[in-house]
Image (cartoon, rainbow, N blue to C red; front, side, top):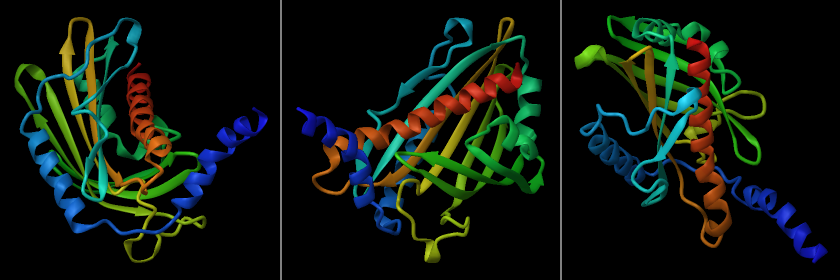
Length: 243
């Protein structure tokens, strides 16, 4: 019995150590992500989550996430929260304040800046961290579009244009290589006025590497939990920022 317990304690770290192999995003996997995102974007505009009492975050896996594609996995999660006393205008002001994202969305966002801005279009840069069994840091860039909808609602579409994994010295890995934990990341915020407050919902669609053969039974659930937990934290941080 003791040996079995020891195996369970050491197995996750051992398996992730085996996955520390640098890979590149296969073109076919990238195309599969674009195809999935295109279909998802054509169906957006309505909340996928429910307003829970007390400002609790509601989470929903979309499309049976994670979804296996050739060479990778697509993670599609939605998280929503009702923020009492907030307004759409305050929410937009918070999201426009990219310079303070490292404060609003800490500790996942380590640094943040605006690279370009023209009307409702922004180009932004975020340094973010993701924790599996160990922490991985990325420099990311996004093309962001703010779109007014009917009924005083707004949608914010943030599509990643570049994601670079950093080494232990915070330098990008050579030639676009990575461990494949995060290849693409798109975030879609819906801001909707509600009686006495505002409803925020974020849908995050990301792409990671496939699981090596034979390791899926234990590694896949661990990797699948990372996008969910990261989204929950992001929505909670946005809620706290508005409060």
